[in-house]
Image (cartoon, rainbow over all chains, first blue to last red; front, side, top):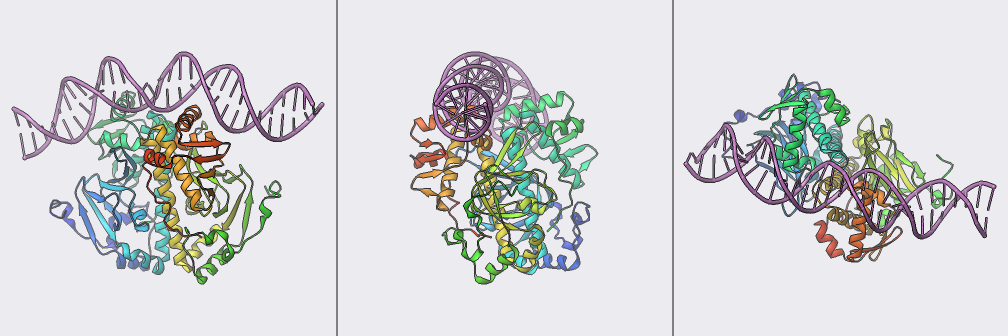
Length: 253
Length: 253
DNA sequence: CGGCGTGTTGAGAGACCTCAAGGCATGTGG
DNA sequence: CCACATGCCTTGAGGTCTCTCAACACGCCG
């Protein structure tokens, strides 16, 4: 697992204080004491290639990670390989909070791109709670935000039409990426296939394809490979009943 | 709101140390110091009648609650009243963690029965994190467990057939209730209508009714009003690919 | 070159939905 | 005590959204 990831972004370890993410306005600033507390807990970095398994379903000793760079997704599967993507994971997001709390992970996490993770060793989480309550609060906050993403997904899959689901997902990913400085105007690189979209929205691959084609024909967006250009954000937001909540500043552990 | 709830279970305030829930084996015991920490934060009790709004969608100052007695559910709605139930809430569950973390609640919570809540005032949550890290950890744990319930719901709605969804929901509610001592052998009282089941599973009322009828005819379960008797738990578990996770001991705040 | 992953499109099938009507129990007011 | 309204459950009929099966195009890569 450490052989295939050779030339990936230099694999440079970054000190928390120098973390580029922290400069983004969506992240709330930490004071020096808090930064020290994090650095004391988080020493190791981990680099994984596209498609790598970050958390294996059923894993019993997964660590807690913060994504420094790259995309991933969390999912559950049934025995006959039906797969449901629970949410997509972007830089600044936590990975593995549930599995850090429980004995075994009920889910899996897989990298969508080459990915750079910061590791918070499982056994140090409790230490963090007792020594740095502010950070503990932030972890809880991030857990709640993740649940909110899953809530939104459940609302989509349970009660929205295929068009509305697609619109909701595109808008949500676009705005999350843009807030991280990953968008260029109305253009984002979404490193996902139609199969991922289908698995996230509870649709079949074929129907996802046809729905995407229809929305594209109507001028909602354009696409070349993984490059998505949002052409009619208003219309997408209306379809999705989108509520801006991803813009709220949030903690970064 | 305090007039209609007259003769409801005497409305006796209970001290945490005397809490009946704590005697159940599924809850991890707390030591005296932790009990004191909770009692210091949680003084108020609240009693609400069936159908009451516990958290209004969009509410900005909701408190954090622990359910002492009664059932509820958490949901999201779209502007045209399509409603998705996110999960059901039983005694020992937390209500309002997300809305305690964020400015506004993205969801609503409604009582399914007369309900007895223990209130953790919103403004004391931070105090709890700084003074009682063990309890802070437990809150995070409970948040993760709630997310796990939503995950399971999303998997159901996204990837399971109607029969499998019904089986999953019935098994899950039955086992959760039984672990709380709310079942009598294979019989539980589920205070929900078919509309609730439909809204939780992303199905229409009519199709929910027909699917329930089919499973009943096949001998999976029997029903009289809200009284459900599980007749073939094995078959239900097989349909649901049920994994026992609700039996793990958990904290009670 | 052939294999593979991804995207596209057509045709037919089926799961699920909407509309509609009626039954049964409970509660309320005359 | 009856009339009536209300909430929940049930069933039938027909429509449609979404699925499965199938085939093909395209680029990439060994």
